[in-house]
Length: 116
Image 1 (cartoon, helix red, strand yellow):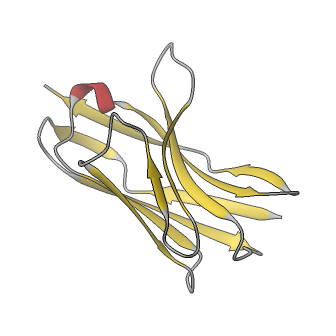
Image 2 (cartoon, rainbow, N blue to C red):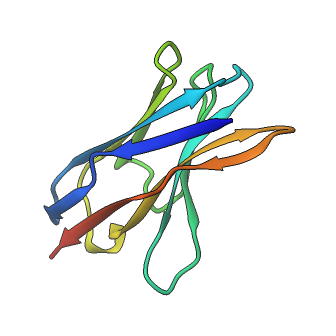
């Protein structure tokens, strides 16, 4: 079993920055992909970005150049640095771990609100 605990959400003005953290407990394999998703009110959950244990990243077009995902394999922790935040980034942000045969694990979510 894997448990994920996110932290770092909050309220920020447009143009500001926030850093989210997600600590995973349990067994994380080197093949596991870690990442972040978000869900705004009335919308479906969408991918923000992912990172492999080797550091390869993938981002949604809407956040490229503004958000950076990093991963500390020794600590089983993934981070999301969010810069130049926009009101449309307002959402609940969820940490995710994907394993090829165990499936998906999700955190409880952390609220990010960007005021204009």
